[in-house]
Length: 144
Image (cartoon, rainbow, N blue to C red; front, side, top):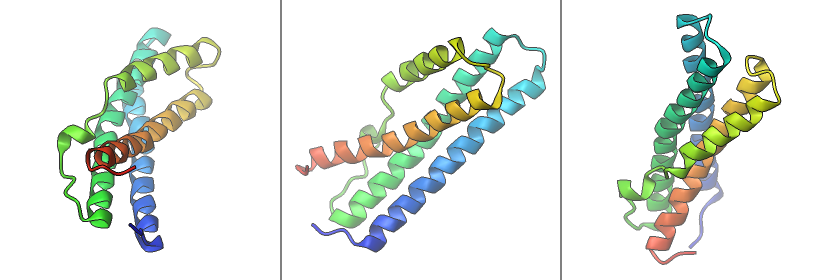
């Protein structure tokens, strides 16, 4: 199976768009939470960040999975339209909670570096979901 450079570039372009939107959405959710409750304490803020990351990762992880399934179908000709394959695994929520907690211990959680690190994690998880989906659908169809 040969995948054209054009197909790969389009796939990467679409995934990059999803990733960029995930970062922006995460930051907007946190900003909205802070605007609604500007006096929140650190514990409340960390919960806001965690919930915003999980929500964003779920939504945009699904979008990345859809991009991956479309790419797989278009480049292999095999039917890959199965929402069970694209489902975000539960361990991602745990992973996000662990990263947020670990980073918060040693950093200024209300500073820009903390939110940038969290938004980068969201972006990474969105990409990982596309990769997981491609791996699952490939394995299901006997491809490596």
